[in-house]
Length: 90
Image 1: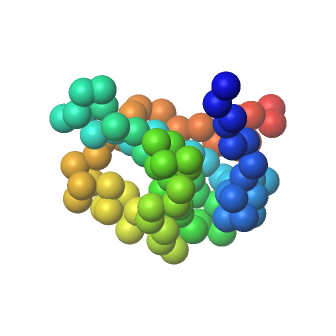
Image 2: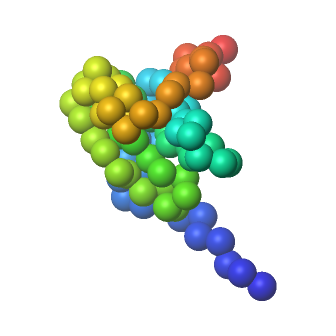
């Protein structure tokens, strides 16, 4: 039997209730496509998480544009749509 770590890292715990929206980005050249999650907090700071590495933060920036350019530079593409905290609370 394999144990799954369900504990949040300190950085994940800090953004757990402080996020504004999240986006999913993919590298479509890989099969299956590789996914990354972009999470933007209420102060506009961005963190890019890698689900394949236990949601480790692989890039952080102080603004969305910098995070977006980092993803585009590595040839990731956004999946259409954005999930915002406001939508979940309605």
